[in-house]
Length: 119
Length: 109
Image 1 (cartoon, each protein chain N blue to C red):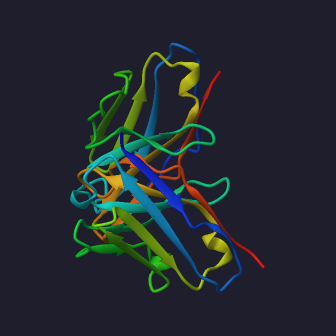
Image 2: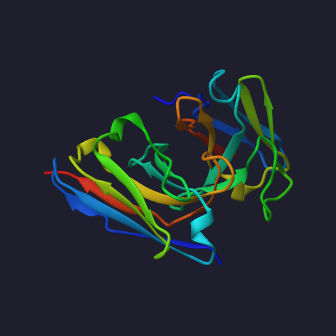
């Protein structure tokens, strides 16, 4: 069974940093591209970042470029999102997702982890 | 503001067929396949349709997708109460972004 479990969320002050992790199991992690998607309270889904299987491709939504860094460790079956210079508008539930085919196709999702940016 | 445009709400009665639309442009829907997601309250999204009209295993054939030009549609036939959820379209954009629609909240009356 495919499982994706996010961790590392919580409350952080504006300008602070957090590192989200996603532990993958039940599939061959190294052959799948991976995504981070977020959802602000009461709002819709927003794609945040994608990473290719060997980390050679990394894409980010404009609003997080220069602040967030996506990475993966295929040996540990883990996906990370380093978030720096956090802003109130980054407050959201963050989901990691396994990509099937095109980067827009996420066939498995984690349960999500809440990040709250507030003073 | 989403670049993929969806109506914020839709509704139907049990057994009815409803359609949810998603409008984009030549750089996204017009040149790349579309996927659709269902999000039940308080849960993570679930993939419903990929590559415009393909259903993952386990998704009932009541759900179908189509695309024409720069627009896509999700149709739900034989509407059931458990279909009440938020529905999102998504597509790759040639500017190297994944775009989601703003979402459509489906109410089963």
